[in-house]
Length: 469
Ligand code: AMP
Ligand code: ZN
Image (cartoon, rainbow, N blue to C red):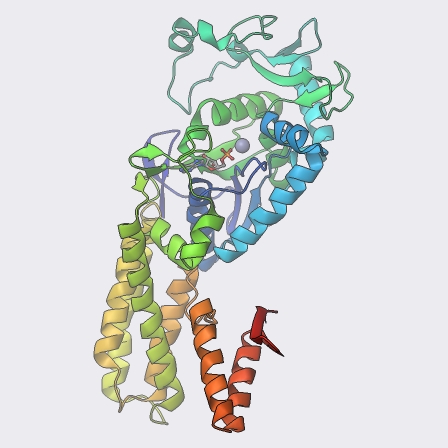
């Protein structure tokens, strides 16, 4: 299996540090708001990659953090007049709901920055002892960027180039830096902000230190894969490497994977530009399986432009797969008993080609677009070869193959269909009509059908009211 490694800018054969095991870290969101669908892109593509690693038999230790201390969280907390933790806990809970609805598996561990302060203090102390960090007069601790000779190796930037145009790196209040390239590891508290005591000052961590610390704690000094959106390459990931490798004296991560942006009108979707849709917004119009399918229809390193047309195409594509699955399930229930015919056995043999194609696509730097094409070929093959006389065993064999591949993509084949408001109203009208005709059996049947879907009816004087249980 090959992975495109941002470090070498080449596709490299994947060889894990420990055979059969993968240690993977994916930078997670800052939780001050509902996540937008740009944030959902790394969640979905790296979840799919993780599923593929598991499909190949690897045991994956997957860590993804929540950044729960940050200027934007504090600002939101001040605006609402609540503690910062109220904001972060609320949006962690909401983010987990979105992840579940997108069928993103929970990480093995989801650490939070505020619960890892001790580890951060330890790492900062080590960096100071080793001469890679220093304490300024006001108690701010800075990383001495030039002390790390390989700085720039991930983003392929040269320190002197960075220095040249970058006087602007000196933002106000950071004038106690030795060098404009230095970055903050720990900074003094401001009035009304959350803070922790430290040997240097009461304060809070800079952003980059948390990922080095959590990765070390949950995965060890050396990990296989570190991933996130491409905006994180510089400075975030570059700084993580500087911190971790200077502290631990080992190569931090062997493979660096970065997804390209989800764009809208060819500009990066972001909170700051205001050109975003939250996952929650999208869930009001589409099943989030459609969003997932849409994300996987492009290679993760290609920019992807969000549009209603592409979402419609994703919806159609997904339906083609789920309809084929339903037919196979039906044939499995109702097909001829007994063993497969000789022809059917040959067809099952032939269908393995689609699995081979699927694996070849995923082995080639997680090419989910081509992997979906292989699934479509299987669907076409199943539609063409399964019919009335087919044995149940044959339908079952094809169904199992389809399900196996769909599972890797995180596509759910048979979903409990949620009733839309309009469908509910129509059923209620039908029930009223049935009652009028004294067809109470049908009326009760409708009531029970609705109940099974979690819709509760209440007969009131003003007519029938309903609610979702
Ligand atoms: P943030 O909360 O901004 O730190 O982002 C969390 C994750 O979402 C990071 O991996 C970002 O790189 C990623 N991300 C943010 N915006 C986009 C976007 N428009 N397209 C793709 N990934 C994004
Ligand atoms: Zn990170």
